[in-house]
Image (cartoon, rainbow, N blue to C red; front, side):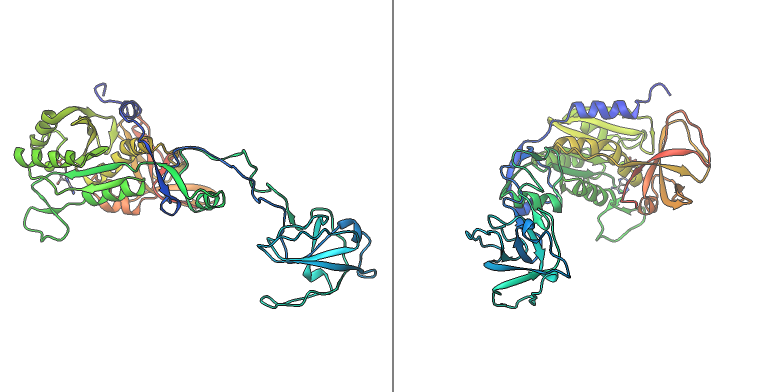
Amino acid sequence: MPDLLNVDDAVARILKEIKPLPAEQIALIDALGRVLAASLVADLSLPPFANSSMDGFAVRAADIADASAANPLSLRVVADIPAGHTSTQIINTGEAARIMTGAPMPTGADAVIPVEQTDQSWRSGDAAPLPERVAISVSVKTGDYVRPVGEDIMAGETILTAGTTIGAPELGVLAALGQAQVSVTRRPRIVILGSGDELVDVGEPLTPGKIRDVNSYTLFGLISAYGGDPILIPTARDTLDDVRRRFREALSYDPDLILSSAGVSVGTFDVVRAVMEELGEIGFWRVNLRPGKPLAFGKLGGKPFFGLPGNPVSAMVTFDVFVRPALLKLTGSSDVFPTIQATLRETLKSDGRRSYIRVTLSREDGQIVARTTGTQSSGALMSMVRADGLLIIPEDVIEASTGQSFPVRLLRNFV
Ligand code: AMP
Ligand code: MG
């Protein structure tokens, strides 16, 4: 099949046309799921001051080196340090300070004894009076129960690199470092456009010959999941005028990317293709993959444009293979496509194209095992609903045998 474009070459050609989007400043609370536009260098250490990791007494470890149950040692309590407060009291030999978790260590003290290892006790919420003395029956080493300055983060360290997707832990680090505003790449605006006289929207009744528009919803979901802002416009009828009107409407949103589905396969009503050619520079590619051989890619009104196949599974698979890398490049994301190796538990015929087989995964006898989800028809929506991933049978393989190992591109978390 020499006239078919290799999948990797097609992806490379697409990525050459995609430019990362500029950065914008947003409030930290809005940053979940966004991609950091610049690396973050810590401008302070965390913790910023040495503090206690327990409720107890700050001591000089050398003072109680000989303490034991048989030989409890008594220290004079000279300060009381709750979290959020500092004490200027210096702890001299023979002295201790009552200290709470997170409170700064007083000068002179170098370790903490948890309250449970003293003769003192208090209940939480209890404003227990400060004792005059505390008896200690265990020894500690210098630094015990003390969180030193910079234990977590050192000032000057690069903490997060550009391209990181901000999750809950990253929100925490950004908050700790005082980043009330965060520089992230702008979210790509992506118009979704379908076409076909047979399509009706989800709320409309099905009359003979009609089916409901699926691709608008699946593409909406995929775009949202990978950090884009989807913009849905009504599907076009199969007339030159309507297709032209909807494509113009797509451009009016000043999108970063336009995604259309259907109308690119051989034998379809040629209006979609005619309008694509009229409004842009589009290449019609026959890519060496299954499902989803027909693919249109180019510029429409100067904007990157994908014409995905109409069959719902083909549209989702080609999104994963071609559009997702483009989306990652637009956002500058350094996310990767998680791929694992799995043992096929079936024998499958392939046709020499690179095949993306919908599979379920399970762990059996210490192996990850893949089985097909059932019919692999490119219209079978349930094959995607059931799939944990896409098992990739490489080009030029016409039989994939049971027991062979293949890469599986994960579509959901597999643990
Ligand atoms: P086409 O490329 O226009 O020939 O479409 C290929 C197949 O995909 C046909 O069976 C269409 O009915 C179907 N199809 C096209 N667009 C959609 C859509 N948005 N939702 C569900 N099926 C679609
Ligand atoms: Mg059609």
